[in-house]
Image (cartoon, rainbow, N blue to C red; front, side):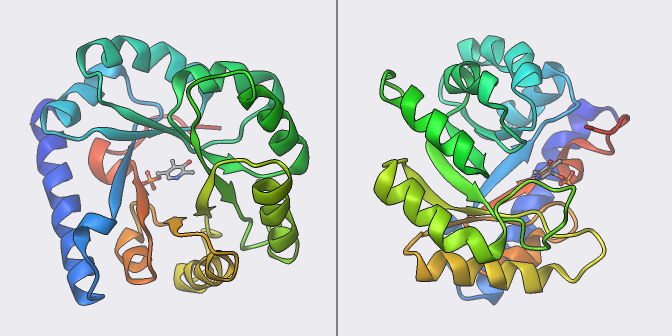
Length: 228
Ligand SMILES: *Cc1c(COP(=O)(O)O)cnc(C)c1O
C-alpha cells in the first residue's frame, strides 16, 4: 500500500485509540485534539490526512512549515497549524504569519519579544508554555521549579494569550510521571490545556488529561531522516 492509502487508515486507528483512552478515563473525546505532526514529510503526504478530514497539524520548524503549508492553506483554508519546535527570536515574525498556535514558549527573552511583536499584529496565536519536566540540559522548556514564576510573568505582565502547557518527556522514562507533573503545574496556575503525548504514549497522556496529543510517525510512518 502507498502512503495515500496508509495515512487515512492510520489516522482512523489513532482516533479510535484516543476514543478508547478517553472512554477509559471517563473523559469526553471531544476534549482531546489530535495534532498531526507532519515534520519531514512533504505536502503531498499531508493531502491524504486533509482529505480524511484532519485539520490540526504540527510542525517543528518555521522554515519547513513555510515551504509546506501556505499552498495547502489555499486549498484547505480551515487548517490550524501549531508550532511544536523551538522558536528563535529572529523567526517570531515569520512564525506569526504561518502558525495559529505556538506551543513552545520556553524562556523569558522569547516571551518578551513575542509580546512586543503581538502588539502590532491582528492575528493572535494561542500559546502554550513548554516545560522541561525531565530537566534535560539538551531540551528546551522552562524548568519545573521556574514554571510558576514564568507562567505568571507571561500571563500577568506580558499579557500573552497563554492557554496551557506542553512537555516532551525524556525518552527513557515512564511518561506518566511527566504527564502528571505537567497537569499539576497547569492546575495550580489555572491553565486548562495540556499538550502531551506522542506516537508511543498518547493513550497514557489522554488518561492524564491531555487536551492535545501530538502524533507524527503513527500517522505518517517512520521518518527517514532525523528532524535535528
Ligand atoms: C516529532 C514530534 C512529535 C511527534 O512524534 P512521534 O513520535 O512521531 O509521534 C511530537 N511532538 C514534538 C515536539 C515533536 O518534535
